[in-house]
Image 1 (spheres, helix red, strand yellow):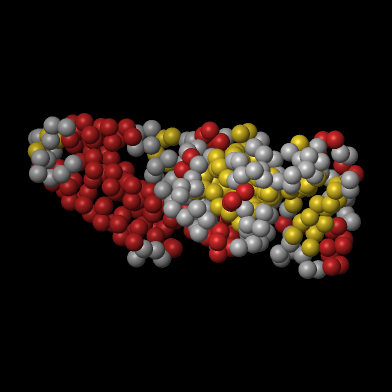
Image 2: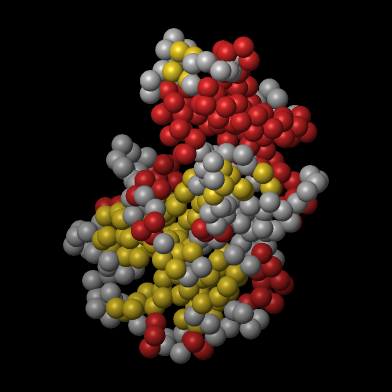
Length: 368
């Protein structure tokens, strides 16, 4: 079987035999995570499954096929020994996924005990009544993949399976700007995903995008469009989807790149009901990486967009007219931040953990 290394989107993963490429000894999850660049190396078993399917097509295992199975069995046991050691280190021997792996292993072991009987290695073996040979191997390798990924998460501190190391930017655009038309006509919201500045939206399925709504009535938000599908790269709304003539719509991008490991990012857009005046001015703020962050993990670009009616006039305004302010509940620290070079005279600002203190609210004032 060939080893496949796939470094798309900054990770390396396929199906099984997961091990750390960098780092020899296991310390604590936090120290492991500090060893930046940890990747997963795996083996693509599609060739093996094709061979096993061919072997089992006539329900006869020949001496030559037994030699191939014997080599695979030796390799399998060698890989399992390393996994068992890690299972002991992390005390997960009683986890359901671990028990399922052992069960699949013992089923395969029982099957091969008959097929690889040392007294019959030079003769054919009929497996008609033993079951599908490919299914035995695949059940084991599939279950072992999940265990190895569990170990990988413990090794790196990614306990929930959510991988923050690869950054995605999720943005939402509105077909009607910052407003939902007052006449009740539709607005189309469209999500896009960017990785390192490249639009990669088309690389992912509609089912990996889920929409939600945030308004002053959180209980109503929880039941908003109950029973309707909120998956997809677009969402059609109108003024009836607003509460008190305003709402924020979010789209969560969640991509599983293995059985248990995934990337996730969220984008938001705020809309209000259209003011029936062509010269009405409004300011809309976009956050490139959502508006909710875990402590110490805030990395996002906030951009102020100025609308006159449905026309974006931001480009016509000088940056000196844009001033940001922060409210974190610490007046002294906020005043220092509000008068800093980061906050004054900028249409966009990059927020890092140093800019966020506890629960912080950011506002952009535009001098018109």
